[in-house]
Amino acid sequence: MKLHAAIVAAVISLFASMSMAADKVPETCSAGITVSAEEAMKIFQGNIAAMQAKALPSAMPVLIVDPRKPSDYEKGHIPGAVSLPIEEGQFTKDALTAAAGGNSAKPMMFYCNGENCPRSHMACEQAAKFGFTGKISYFYTGIGVNGWPRVNGPLVQGPKPYPTMP
Figure (cartoon, helix red, strand yellow):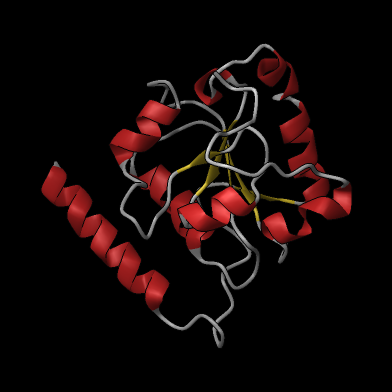
């Protein structure tokens, strides 16, 4: 299993290191639906009560996954999002299963930095290959987290999904 994860991480890392400037990241994910910033905001708002109750991300109605580098995550991420960086090999079936609380039917939303960031698209596609069957949302629309403030979406800094999380 560890060898499989290492191979997947190496392939993903190789793909992510390719120049994406000339090639736009796909706007859709075959494993899920593409959501607008407004739709992503509704998904986030559905998690607020769980965050107020200091729930772990696995207990939130929708698991929000940030597959960017840890440094990008710490600079600013959607509150409640879990960090599962692809390039560091931390986006694995086991890690996603743990983040989802063992629930392979857990609804999920993936995001990254927008049209030049391939990570959320790769994570979205990979989640289905891992066997996750819940509703998968792909927050792309060319803006990702960079466009989140456009809908007054809050960003939090630091290594925790949200500041008051135990």
